[in-house]
Length: 382
Image (cartoon, rainbow, N blue to C red; front, side, top):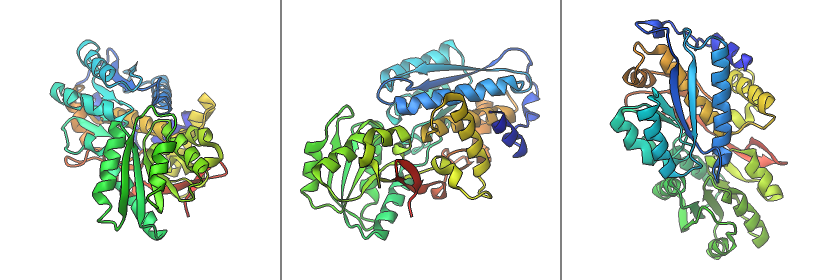
């Protein structure tokens, strides 16, 4: 982690000068986190929680922000929207946090979006659904790339592969429904015909019947949009059925544990994601490489676990709040919100963030790469 702080010093992220204006040196700064540390979405929330703890631990060891320590209060929602609502109220009303990072999933985020807006508490979500920031709310931000960018990347790659007819399947979650909507929205515009579009239960353990139905339509490819374990079940069921067509997944596939669970069936899966998963393969002069490698090395050394896109979303969320705190002229929620919205050129794991009054995601199409699985590892799709 020392390497991360060294990199941040180099790129000028640790300033702290503006933060000192009119602020007390006493007490800590409370940041709340709502993450799916356990349950079906733990592949997302667990690395997010570990990452945030690592960042805060090392920041505090280095003196905090102008002598103020960060107190990170993590609540495990287990991806349950009702728990997320309860924890959000608790963090806002009882703990008096200055901002909330998370939740891990889109469904939870959509449940607390209006709540945070009504309390005027900055929320930096780790979830991907475009509806989190569209329509935009003044206090709500998110770190993963927009669904629409992912859908367009998938379709652009399909056109290069001369794919015309596809089947779309998605989990019945906020993330799955939002992604399915984006795929359906842009298919015609991108010259792709969706001949079948289906939703499955997020707790499904066997999707053979659904995929048999998709296969009967004579599709050229399948797109699966989910973050649940079905990301590993779909390729295994396709292989068992002998479906010899490409499988595309969403950016929710960015955890090597999904590959390990799918085994050989994961070979050749194509999906868009940020560059963290292929950080070591980037050219030395890439503007994100130093930051990505520093985070990757620190996380893997501390936890003996391969880094994931989701840990990266957590890293970006907590670092953006910390950056906002350093640059805020007032130590209150309004000041942090204003400071977040003015962040520009911030080198996160998901890309270079440029928030504006009209864009609370701050990432463009160029933040994504098309990746695949080769010999059980993530690699560039060529």
